[in-house]
Length: 259
Image (cartoon, helix red, strand yellow):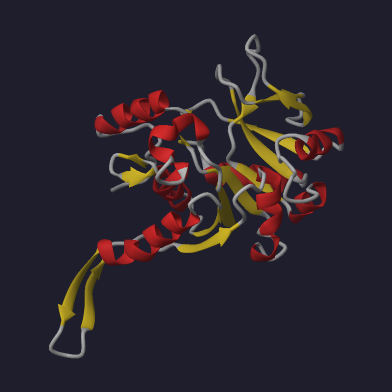
């Protein structure tokens, strides 16, 4: 199964760094948060990625272009017509497609634009600015078990995310924006979608977390996968510092992989 990562927004609430690079390329422990997210997916067997780029998308493409070289031991032999010999390859076994989904495209529009890259198969979907120790394999297995269109990882934290009204069968009956007084389950990303989800998205102006989510819930096509472990987004500089501090402990709670 492929993982689609939304990485095209402006990152307006963390402007100290996002004026120079897309938010998913802001580093935690010397590596982009996008790298941390992909390492989590790889640990659970997902090794093919589609990056929905937009704002400063060239930064993402250039980083991946250089990554293999920067993580390998190489010899540059200028006596043999500039031959490059690779001795050890330390890069992860990823297949990464970076798609320019537009500068001002909304989240739903970005998803719609990568339709041809998922080959009419179910796919994972998440945001490029949050890390978690959610069990991706169990999430995928749960999604396959119920046959509905979309599964959302639900978490319970005091943040401004989309509220999920979940019944006893883990079906999401309502999706709405969170209020400050809410203590409800919220959308933590780390979703799994069937190709039918594209039918709920009109075009570039569609915000996935609004009308598509509401209609999916109304149609009984939205399921909840509850995660009571670690989850943290990086919307602000304060949250970035928090993640940096957790990484500095040597055992950040989202690092499910082994070095």
